[in-house]
Every structure is written in C-alpha cells, then in structure tokens.
Length: 358
Length: 109
Image (cartoon, rainbow over all chains, first blue to last red; front, side, top):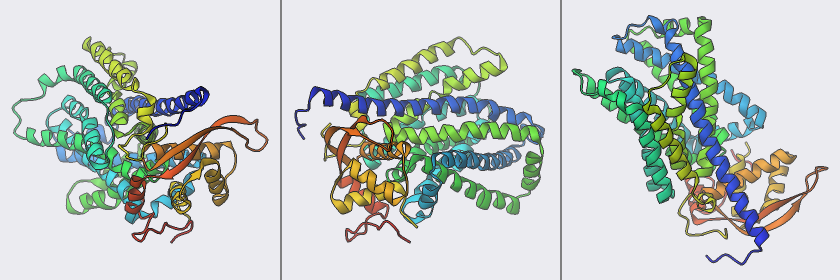
C-alpha cells in the first residue's frame, strides 16, 4: 500500500517511534543475556551445597532427581519474584484473567513451560551428565535457529537476510568460546553417550520451541503476565506430576532432598539469587519477543555465552582462555549486524498482506 | 470475570471496526478503572506489540498534543488502529472471536 505524503516532521517522529520500540526490544534481549549469564554463578554454586554436594558424580539417577527437586524449588521462588514484579506493575489482575482462559490461551504457556522446563532443562542435564558440560552449552547455542524456523513456519515471522546473518555470527561466536572444550568430551569411550546427544537435541528443541509456542499466546496477552503463567504451569508440572511420580514409583529420596534443601540456608540463598536472575531474565526474554520477534530475541539472548564466562571470571578470578576474545568480538559484531536492521522492518514482525502506512 | 486487557483491545477493535488510539485507550481506562500516564503508556505499548505481531495495523498517523490530568501536555503520535485478517484468525484461535463472528463481551464467564 502506498504511504500518503507525510510532512517531514511526522516522518521523522514516526521513525523515532519505530526506532525506540526496536531499541527497547534489543535492550530487553540484552538484559536476558546478562541475567542468564549471571544466573550461572548461583546456579553452579548451588551444586557445592548440601544435599547436592554429597551426591557422587556417577549416581546419575540421583543427580537427575536432585535436579528436579532443585528446579521445582527454584520455580517456586521465580513465581514469588514475578508476583512482586506484576504487583508493582499493577498486572496481577490481568494475570488471573489470563490464567483462567486455559482452553484457548494459557494452555500455550503450559506447553511453553513443558518445552522450556522438563524438556530443555532435563535435556541439558542429560547432555551434561552423559557427554559433558561443554557439549551441553554448545547444543543450547543452536536454539535460536529452531525458534526462528518454527516461528517462520508457524506464523510467518519475518527474518531478514541481515537478521539471519547476525544470528549466524552470534552462534559462531558462541562456538568459538565453547567449541575448543568439546575435543575432550565428544567421542570418548562411553556406551551411554547417545543419551547425552539425545539430551542435547532435547535442550535445543525445547528452548527453541518455547519462544515460538509462548509467542502464540503472547499475541493476545501481556508478556509480563505470560511469563508468570508459564512459571505457574512449570510449578504444577514438577510439583503435581513429576516429583510425586518419582517419589511414588521409584526409590529416589525426593522428600529427603526437598527437606534438606529448604533446611539449608546457604542452599536457599543460592536458589533465591538464581531465581531473581532467572525471573527477570525470562521476563526480559518474553518482552523482547513481542517487540523484535522470537528469532532476534533468542539470538541476542545467546550472548549469555559471553556473560556467563565474564561473571564466572569475576567471581572465581579465573581468566577465560584467549579464544574467548575472538568469540566476544564475533558475538558483539553479530549483535550490531542485527541491530543495524531498519527500525521500520522490525516494527512489523510478520508477513502481513494488510501493510501499514509506515 | 473481565477479559484480559489485550483481549479487550482486540474485541473493541472488532466491534467498532477500527478506532483511533486516544478513544480506544480512554475506553480501556474506564473499563478497568485505570488512570495516569503509566496506564496510558502501558496501553500504547500493548498496541505497539499488537501491531508488531501483525494482529492490527496502524494507519493515519497524526501528531497530537496529549494531555493527562495536570501533567504538562506533550506532543505524541496517534494512529488509527484496525484488525488485520491475521488478527481475526488469531482471535478465533484464542476464543476471542466465535465462529459466527461475534466477539467476546467485556465480562465473560
């Protein structure tokens, strides 16, 4: 559709309007990466506290059970932080109004929580346990591709050549950072390694699909409310289905793990800190989707690879290896390539035959 | 229970065929007993999100002077919003629009 001849002042105000939305979208995505990176510090420290530190490395089923317990307590704390956030923003009422529409709307958040929670997190831990942590980190880096492809096929999200190029450069940066560590992990004499590879695929698929699935409900709901719904369902999945099933049908000490966790103040401090990071990381993640789309939001979110190493270096005083700098340059360059897209392109994320007078 | 706010925005646009943002926001503020600059800005953001997602189109941009209570007036952009065919499909998918084309009421079970 041909745009009418606007005055220069109106034209420049329109451009500023679209540019501001684009900037906010990228800022939210960057906050996702920063807080996701920061999450690794308390998230890792938790494994050095009782009861988790006492679990031997070779007891995989116990470690996975501990992960399930840890994830549930963590999700409960995330819920509290999100309640605080939405309380301050005055959106608790809208949260209730959205949650009750399960059959047509909030079920998508339930599905998103299955993708991002049990599927991606569990898959990531399988990858860590059966192949290694570097392999788990590398496979997770590919989730924006899945997200972008699903969003493209499912609701025609536009991914320009520039956005796709930026996404590829960011992923290459992540590969440079974590890739060299892979040589020690992949191909070893491990008959259960296929479980790790399966876990890697599950984590990339889970996190990639989460964005696309959640965006389907977020089209008609508020992103702050959406993330609150998503964690409400995650709490229910772990608390009503998975943990009771593990407690009832296996000999794993679920109750004992839960009790020891909540009774250990140090473990709870790490969980609270990790939850604060995770709650606002996810909030920023969902907010970025509605302004710059799932593909771009997830690709910028991939910068967590850089921030995780920076935060770990800051807290452990162990400098990252030299090739980290190469990865850093690539990821920053990829972000600028994506940010260089025209604001007008990003203002309309879907192929829409009813074009705007923009 | 009332509809969630984005659902309300979409159903009003459907019922009225399209609306300028000031009128739509005024209607929403009244329906949800909201007031002040923060509430108005939040609704503008919601409309921007709906536009970015392709559910609505913003046409006829205008520069207006916006006044809220006793806060200093400011220059603002105003658009005329209309649903797109994709918006209608998404409203059907999410139950905001019945198969017979009637939109959900402000209060619904």
